[in-house]
Image (cartoon, rainbow, N blue to C red):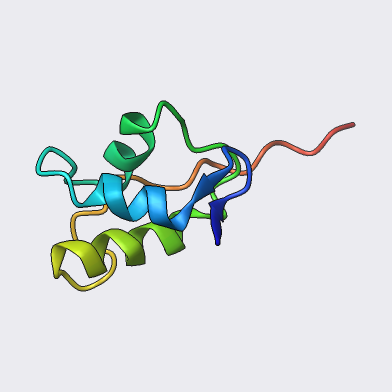
Length: 74
């Protein structure tokens, strides 16, 4: 299953990355895969994935907020 469409990050790869000792935040999952949050729609799923791997409730220690919405075009 794809977790992040913008970066084409699959769930298995994200889980594997999240299991690494140095990976403590959602931002780390992206960085360790050479990616950055784009639209932010995947952040809640990534938080839940990281929490399940680390044994924390979702949202604890996420370390990343979704990007602010873009200004409307005129």
